[in-house]
Image (cartoon, rainbow, N blue to C red; front, side):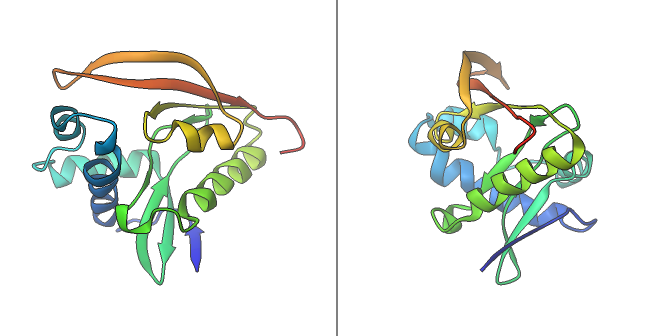
Length: 158
């Protein structure tokens, strides 16, 4: 069973293996090894990571008490992080997180959700009604990376 809860102090360290595996084992099907390593370096500073996670306060997805995914939505509707562990793909984790994002957006009166979505996640976002607004190529730690700006307008019935 998948449960999703709010972020709690102490969750920071458990999110990094999720992030790392999602990129190195899932997104790597769409990106070169150079992009993967720039995006999720093996030598990521744990303190810097903890501060980043504390700043976005993601929802935490659990399966049998283990953190298997996390995602956030900021007050302006931006979804900054959305990652599911490679070991927990296709079992409903991403769907549960996206449903939580939509519920949170409705509670907070957010009318537009948007994100910079990796090549590997664009189909998932499209299934939830997001559309591609712009394909993007940018430099990330000196390596060219591509993704898409995707968005979804929310109406009062979401």
